[in-house]
View 1 (cartoon, one colour):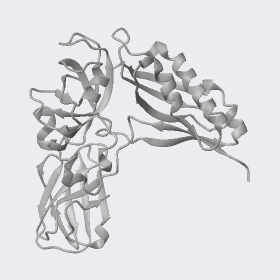
View 2: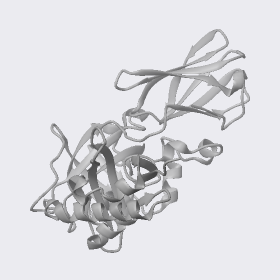
View 3: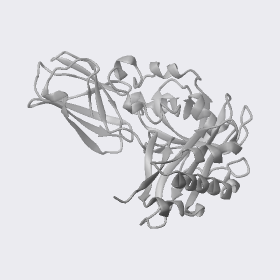
View 4: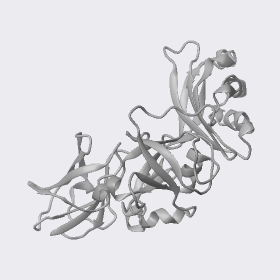
Length: 345
């Protein structure tokens, strides 16, 4: 059997932390992969505590470059990011390929140091982005548990919390003002927020992050009140009021649409949390046996329906705010009603 090695990267920031294969092949050939084959598309942000870059890996013998996505690493010193990123390159069984990957990553970062984001070289806002305001919500990770979208409540995550990744687990989440929250329709939406380094109440540096809406109550209008990690990525500050521009974007690396029963063991009534997917949920139906029931938004990302004692196979029909629709079916092994915190993906 011919020995093979798989060079992988730990991808963090846009998707759930994953081990993504770059190339599999002859170990001796992998050792010869030149450093210049790893190229950075852009440096999104480099701060005292965190570095975020987007890169592409192009390997000889591979049909097309691999879009790895965004690497985001916390570090005590932005200048050490090359070393940090080098350490995220792993190999299955072959040290030579591992060392080559490390060298390539370091080389790529050195070539793109000039692209570091600064007030003089700010990130380019998404075309058509809207002016808004950014503040810091909290530095307490448990604050999200009380979020009005209900994604992180104990009853919601008792059996699974896969939808918390990547945005909530990485601290890239926000409360928004009521004009954006829209009675809960914004729950689960993602926004690209850009600070260009202009005057604010506190010193900061230009930056950008994609964040997910998990709560309401930010006050004012076009206002994002973000957890400290996302806030710092965007501004390099820990507090203050910053002018930003924002655009609604598709969430990346999120789990498939998921239904979580929040009021169970009841054939007459059900409350469901809908999570996952690339944007907010506009409407939903539940199908039980041969009957269909339209659901009404209770608050945030939760919907309810009176189910009239129906029983049998359950499924859900979810329509998102971009007009797309998806079926969540094959649920609960054909049983209904089911206990609270039951999950169907």
